Length: 148
Image (cartoon, rainbow, N blue to C red):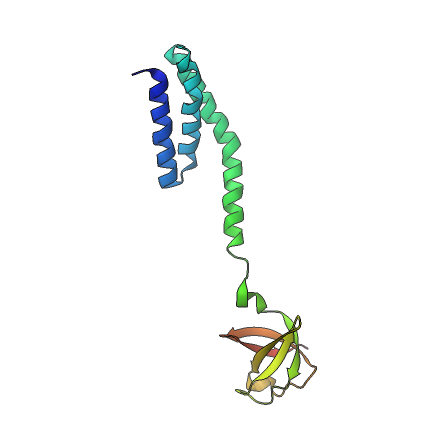
């Protein structure tokens, strides 16, 4: 078997390991093996092939590791961003229909959108025009308290 084919097989095997495990090291080693195909194709001595593979793997580690790490950190950070109803918590709205007592629903307008809203007994009554802060939600009903 020719040396360049051995390096190609090693590259494919290491890329497969990378896909299955997510280990950055396997990706860097596969880049080194890919670089070693060039001297192997021109029948350079095996020592030269290993030196090229080593240099290629080390260079790939220093180049790819920070990029992949930054991508993974950004991806993890993005998972913590609020979305959908969770993004409503902490927002401020204006009461459009009064919330007279606990369990009775009124309406709150946020960004021009009217939402059903309730308040706990300690915050009732809340009159039209008052500013309220969203403290939680139950399905599509906002739970609010007066913004003071």
